[in-house]
Image 1 (spheres, rainbow, N blue to C red):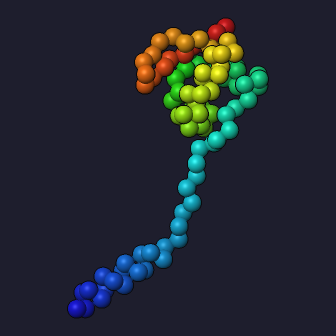
Image 2: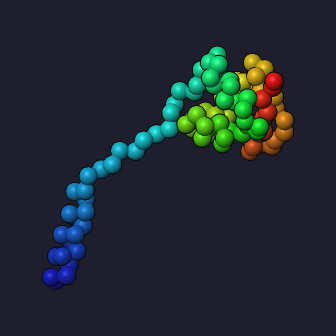
Length: 92
């Protein structure tokens, strides 16, 4: 009985811990017209959604959309890929 009482106290004290806030990755993609962003992209040899997401602190889905928009504007060129992964390269 004493053991059960101690376990309950541990569980109750564990729930009173402070809650840490989760930080989400940036939601707003970088400005396409910014010279700084375009220069950073041109320095990269290969552009994948993962590399863009890590460089600009974005979610993968947002980075994928960002690369598609860059392709429409003629800043990057689609090289190859499949359904899951697409590879782009910057145009000079």
